[in-house]
Amino acid sequence: QVQLVESGGGLVQAGGSLRLSCAASGGTFSSYNMAWFRQAPDKEREFVARISPSGGATWYADSVKARFIISRDNAKNTVFLQMNSLNPEDTAVYSCAAARPGAIFNYWGQGTQVTVSS
Image 1: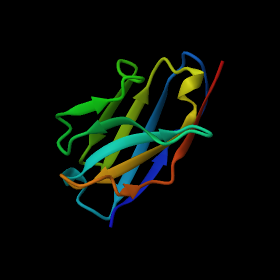
Image 2: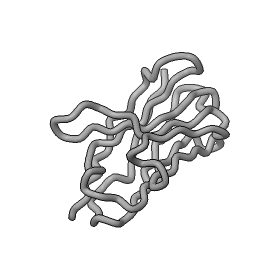
Image 3: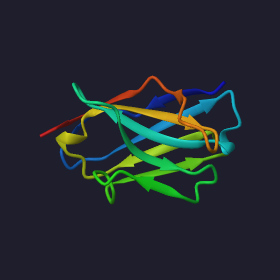
Image 4: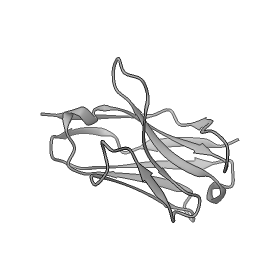
């Protein structure tokens, strides 16, 4: 069983940056695909970014490509999301998720709120 705890959310002005962290415990972190998702008020949860177990491959939603960077530190069991050039449309609860290779993302953190003011 993997436990995930996010941190780093907050209030930021448009054009600013935030770095989210997700600390994992209870599993072999380096064997999991990790991802960030977000859910804005009255909207469905959407995919943001994903990183392979080794960190050698990453994928992004078109809406965040070139602005957000996902990375991981397997020695510290942590995945990061560097968010740059934030705009109000990025306001959401951001959650990290873990999945064994070939499986769906079925381990979730509680989420951290990101609010971008205009």
